[in-house]
Length: 190
Image (tube, rainbow, N blue to C red):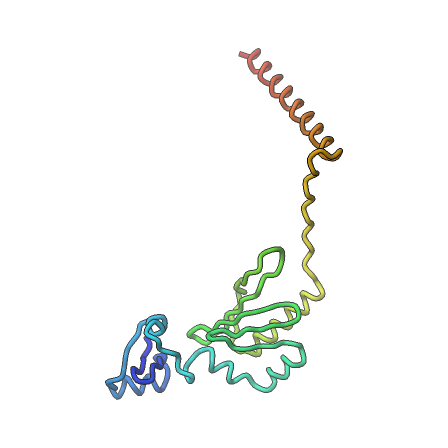
């Protein structure tokens, strides 16, 4: 349940003191929403005090900032996400209602460039930064194998193409002879 203020167009979580105060005082500006998406459709924005993303990001302590500076990790907040960039990888962090951090890693192996969810949840931003650093150290020591490129088929009319066609015709002739012999053998058994 979310509580919105019709005048300020700010929506609060149930646990937020401002939302509880509006509910307790039975304010005429109070609007109730079941999901944040409902409030967002009506152009409400999240409260800066109870927003699950803003609060942890604002409270990034000096040791976490120092850890990022020492290990070439940069981060920035974009809307409801925390974007983390390192020399080896890119990450997106979402915060759920329970203030647990869900970590998405950008897959850069092969032609696909999409994000996938890591199975773990983290309780602090510092723990996320530490995991990202450990992942990059591991990836630096154990790089992913490079995929072999497929060979292009030989061009028509070249000797390579003619030889390939001869091999294909010979294989086809042999399989046809084998199939015919099997058919004759099966008819002779009947």
